[in-house]
Length: 113
Image 1 (cartoon, rainbow, N blue to C red):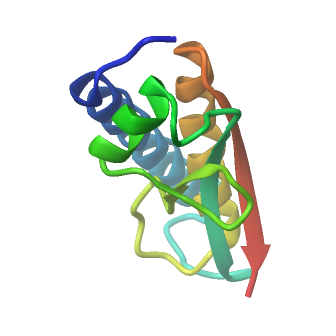
Image 2: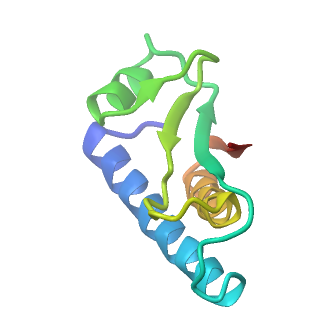
């Protein structure tokens, strides 16, 4: 993979838009618009990119930061203001799929609060 910081920003933007759509779809279809059931957090982690490589430097320029586990992290990619963890996870999974489409090793994560 050889992306510029601008291209990475565009990819992340696409992933966040898809995540937002998927989370809102979950809220409307599964939760019937009500914020209930377990609350928590969701995110996407991108593994396998060293910070000192050309791609790693472009990731940093694009505004992505590494987590304690060495992965680049996108916190709550859906940007929904619900506490429900399931809608946030649906968004994170959708974002991870977009990132995978571009060749990134991306996985959704979640934690119940």
